[in-house]
Image 1 (tube, one colour):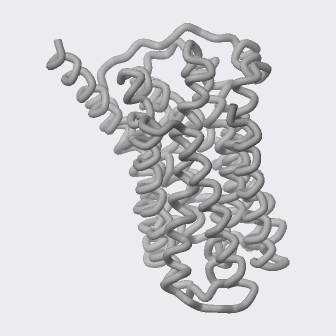
Image 2 (image 1 turned 135 degrees about the vertical axis):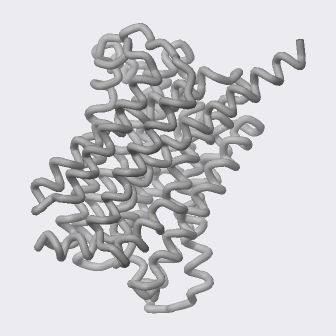
Length: 389
């Protein structure tokens, strides 16, 4: 019996690796723009702040569409649904790559958000169902790991591709990646049935449940703190002495920290519980961003220290997702897919809000951007302590 149980656990965790390939494609699509935002803005004859709002639009559209599309597609077999979502992402990125102006780019980002809004929560819910409860944090960290690996590899490689081939070619490569991974998911993933259709009003009714409502704002705060800076990382890092040709390395370090932080948080959440892991994450983020802001304010250029702080910034950003998902599933175990979808909306609402705030401040002073991000990270830590029960 124990051998059968171990085999089942291993098969469940192995299946999540396939789902992680999809979240890698989604993450590359969502975050790659940060690496070539200035050149995109110049090509579209707009400002960096205006082009950065394509990230905001993607994030807000994702946040709004996730629960709606989860309701509309509830009965669709899971493999079919995930493959279709990746196909939509590929088509949307082709649209972004050939966009003649900012309006078309924005429209294509809304379409991409629709694909991502279907795929990411669907992959998270399936991964949680494939493993026993004691391995749930680990399985979720594997799927979220696709997003974090995208920040470590997909975004810097997109930055390099954008520099060598141009940003349009880079987005074309992202489109090809989405379509290729969609084919891989179709060939490798087992056929899984859809679930029961949960009306949208019932999904949103979970927002009135105190245990759920107490958790979701923390996701918005935590992601908002990090993404106040991330979409504008090129000018923000320039303010702390990072040359533009070194931005790729810094984005890689951010992504490396994200990968390490995410996987460690999955294991440690299973062992020590989510609240402790979240506390360490938010306090580390606040400290790292505060020190980067100090470098921007003073004009110091201690590059090894800046590199370490960027690593901590990435780790602390993506430490929070597995424990937050675990808290939500614990709060509503019979509606795991619904609360994971709501958390995905909260993630992208935080990204959109942070990017909007960063866009408003970046033209004034990068120091103000760091200060705002530090303040929000500190608020996240305070909110965690206030609602930890």
